[in-house]
Length: 193
Image 1 (spheres, rainbow, N blue to C red):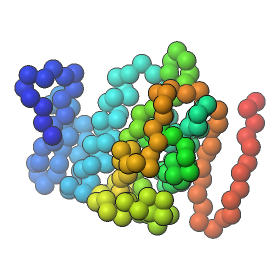
Image 2: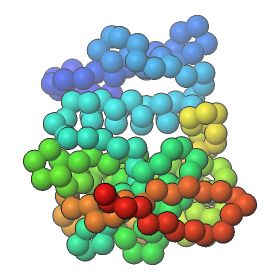
Image 3: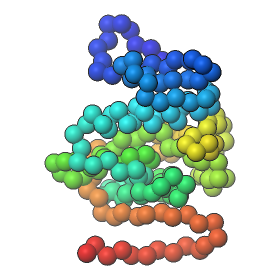
């Protein structure tokens, strides 16, 4: 990926190979590194997103999937491996608009969530479930994501991904997914008080 020398930019990201590692540099300073090409894509996605959010004027950024219907958004915050991406992909398959799979950014002025549709990262354990909704997942290359887990990405350009007509929506619900292989479905309401 390169940009012509005439293009003005606030941030320059370089990828340099040295000492058997790949280093990401932001304006000539090392910001991250990885061992191999299989790990590079998740690192680049993370760092580009981090830089974009860091330099924005949002109230808060939350590690969360976000989907919406025609009226409002649903936040799906959670730690890695708890089912946030799997639930996001399933809801998109069932007709919800796709806002993001990584970070929900909330506007300082309106407290609405903004659509920032990044590629949806699906970890290996969820591939069979998500491939039943998005068969093209099986054709995507494998990468090594956080914590050494294999991950494949679905791009929002897929015809099955409905992107929102409005770039911002109020948040109607917050659902905290917590996948546990040995438990049945359980939904608990949390008090707003």
